[in-house]
Image (tube, rainbow, N blue to C red; front, side):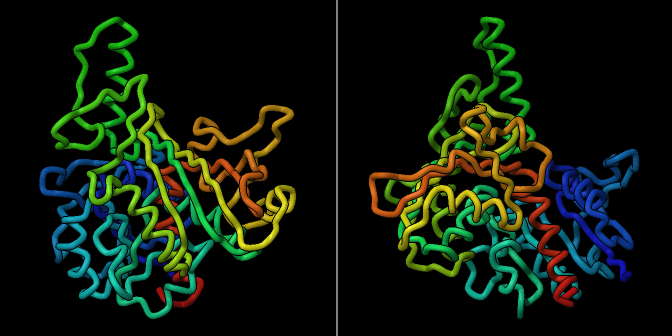
Amino acid sequence: MKKYNVAIVGATGMVGQSLVQVLKERNFPVGGLKLLASARSVNLTVEVQGQSYRVEEAVPEAFEGVDVAFFSAGESVSRELAPEAARRGTVVIDNSNAFRMDEGMPLVVPEVNAHDLAGHKGIIANPNCSTIQLVVALQPLQEAAGLKRVVVASYQSVSGAGKEAVDELKAQSAAILAGRDDFPRERIPHAGAKVQHQIGFNMVPQIDVFVEDGYCKEEMKIIRETRKIMGLPDLRITATTVRVPSLNGHSEAVNVELERPLSATSARELLARSPGIVVMDDPDNLVYPMPVYVSGRDEVFVGRIRPDHSVPYGINMWVVADNIRKGAATNSIQIAEALIARGQL
């Protein structure tokens, strides 16, 4: 089997470390592995499954001889270095928002639109975490009965805001339980916000900055990316995104209005046999997806599948996934696996 030289940009972050782990778990055919980060992280070591890797500086020359590079270091780094890597013959799979909505840029969830990898120009965009799990669950319904309208409310864990937000939730929770209010508020709703909110024992109905018509950036990502990935530019879709005091795993309440009849039973059976989905739906025994059950898993979990009686053809469902794995690292690696399977890497 051919082996590939792999680089990970942003290797010291949560997604970067998860990329190393998932590469190992999935037996990706790695020839050489290069971990890249900013200058301040040079010579640090990252340990995964007992093996240590030295971190090198992410500079254009670092991509010489690299077959595929996974970027997870933020939009500015991607805009600067991804084109440099692509010019050196490296296929870039980028986890930032830098290129997702660019004309002609593949934005890919392999279970949904692997065909869009054809003709890529060296850079492939990995979608937003909350979009990935949504479209995996929506695609089977679209194929079976057509999507007329989608309403989604997301309940997103603090790991989506980075390790610092995870640490902040832990610190806040400990302080509140101890009866103190001298806890840090620096990461929610986002770093640099003019007002910082408590997330411990609280929910915050804003993720990222506000952009237009009272929507925040995360909501617009879901709307625009879903339309692009599914090839439905006129899809009627709206979103509300909420940060919740969960450490890992994003949840979504999804209401779908369909073009044609589809019973909840048929939807359940359809989803259960669809790629990348695990149906966890047994109300009689109180079985449904929850973040504590899906953390560390690569599938999208769906439950609470039931009819929406307020419209002629409607389905409600609850969709949960590990946002660091399927929402970022695993989906990126699945893109690379799809490229190999298609003879494009």
